Length: 250
Image 1 (cartoon, rainbow, N blue to C red):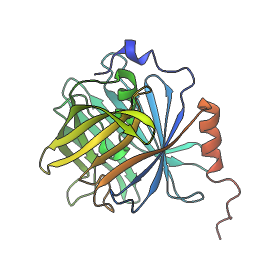
Image 2 (cartoon, rainbow, N blue to C red):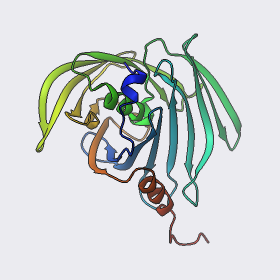
Image 3 (tube, one colour):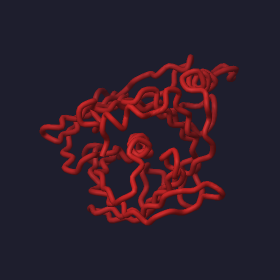
């Protein structure tokens, strides 16, 4: 769905999109902030509260195909930097994800086939999907593959299947015009849900699926809280603030 022509239309000073991810009933809330520093990169910052461990994950699109080429997993450092501890690379020719993560017991590596294109990592909270949707502003059905990092008895990569998004026309989220898509997951664990996109800007306003993307959840909901202007300066300030004036560890 992505193309370089559409990517090039992205704003020069993109906003920060603030979300809450939770169960569909609102329980287990976590703050999710998405930022697109360039037309081919996305950054996501996740935290329950300041001064506690927070995720900082970045992704890059292949400039030729527009599909995700790789992702760096990390956490927020004391000065707001990304402290990396894992990596996913994607080979488009063989449709293979190659992942590694550093653990206290050593480095774990794994590979998995991803047959559907494009693909969007579910536990990235639709971060790369959000970037794609802002570029293409879809008004018709589309689909995407849904891999997931999920610790299990053998390995940690799962392929959840193909998500079909059916165009349902226009809707409203409070007073904001939106575009609605109903979602259905065709895979080992079928699921249903929906997407509501800002009609003008194209970003996700609400998203739900009846399956979780983290092991402490029952299902999945993403709700937009605010759109913050300021671009890179606002992003850097937000990350530096995470550990600012925090109590010193004993």
